[in-house]
Length: 186
Image (cartoon, rainbow, N blue to C red; front, side, top):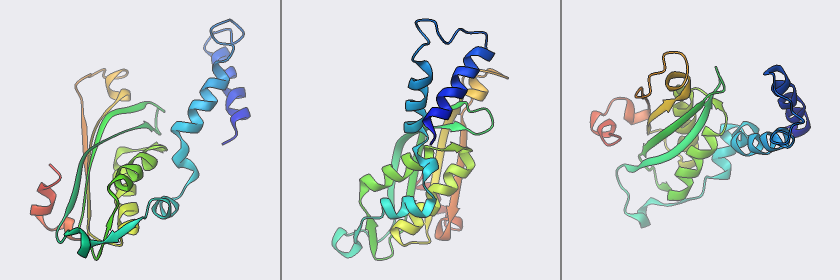
């Protein structure tokens, strides 16, 4: 990320909004926003394959006792909508996969969800990205992802419906056809 370019453009944005970027409260805002963007958009710098490689630490499923689905629920993430650059917040991700000889370290599942969310995203694509990354990292074709979240482009602008929640589901492999596996994500 080009932090100096971000600072320049944030300064211009403040001016375009009618603000004085040299006033006391805003003098350091362009630099602070650039620092924040570097952190919250970290995932832009990585492909799904690279994220799978980063967080692909697995263990033999024979030693773990996992012979059916591994389910992790209520992973909290946030992201930014690519249409409005508006916050997608209060998002929970439920992930399930069927091990094929290997299981992921549990923290790696949450880290994958977090890194995939650190991009300008659509909730639907975020689910697909997480499923793709988990599939590669765990070496399994069988993955399900359920995401429920609020979008400030719905709650704070436009229709201004503060209770609107969006739910998306992504199923690949056995999760596509097995209702019993899909229900584990509820």
